[in-house]
Amino acid sequence: STCWSRLGRIAKNADRRRLLQDPALLAPLARQTAAALDDWGPWGVSATAHAAAKLRLEGGPYEALWSKLGTAAAASARDFNCQGLANTAWAFATADVHAPALFSALAEESVPRLGEFTAQNLSNTAWAFAKAGEPAPALFAAVAKVAVPRLGEFKAQELSNTVWAFGTAGEPSPALFAAVAQEA
Image (cartoon, rainbow, N blue to C red):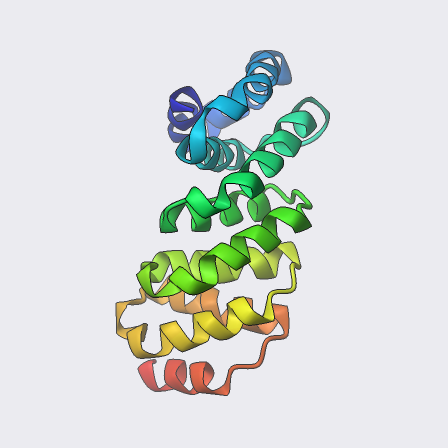
């Protein structure tokens, strides 16, 4: 997972990212990763998914990796920390990987712990569920309840992403929208 994390950091540079997207370079590593993932623990699974999304690994050579990541993440969601839950949701949404069982597990584990999430994690989680088109009414209701008294902690982008997520997901939250309007 450390290798994937470092590659993900390199990917911040567009020219380097294009080089790293060459399947001839990363497909063998993806196959090895998929084979070894069961032994990596929750942090390794989350960090690898996050890096793979930052690298924009998509399509044929990476389908097995995303499938294995989804299975491993769903199985270990209860062991993720708050950032791991948010980052994993963000990764799968960013990569446009359809993983309903994973999103269901992430929602189930996130809801009781949302009070421990940072503003960024709250925003990213709501954004990920909306972008992925995964219905999660209980999650959105809980995010709204936790976010309203903490809106002062949100950066402008986090507020924007959170409002976008609720609108896109079709999750009404008059209290959240009124509080955001007052904050602006």
